[in-house]
Structures are given as structure tokens and as C-alpha cells.
Image 1 (cartoon, helix red, strand yellow):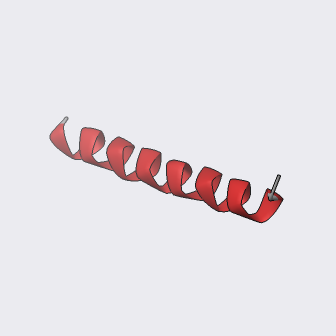
Image 2 (cartoon, helix red, strand yellow):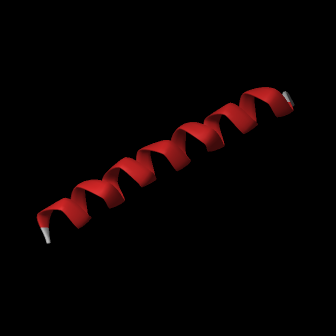
Length: 28
């Protein structure tokens, strides 16, 4: 299994979660 690919996937998920959190905060 390719660790680098997995790490980049985790990074993408983390970024998406951050953006989602930011949008939620903006709506409050």
C-alpha cells in the first residue's frame, strides 16, 4: 500500500472538514 497516497487523502479530508467548519461558523 502507498503511504504517500493515503497521507494526501487524509490531508484532503482534513482540508474539506476545515472548510465545512468555517462555513458553519460563518452561518452562526
